[in-house]
Amino acid sequence: MKIGMCMFLWTTAVSKKHEPLLRDIKATGFDGVEIPIFAGTPDDYRK
Image (cartoon, rainbow, N blue to C red; front, side):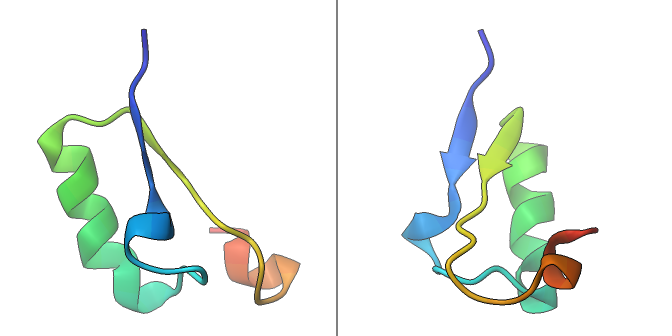
């Protein structure tokens, strides 16, 4: 089973400023994150 974290706990629009948080989530042992895509453009989510 894989376990993920939902970014809604922190934001509705993930940006570069959330990269440290994403690294922390990974280091904690989560397998992935659910990214809300209510704002921004496709280019914002390519990375």
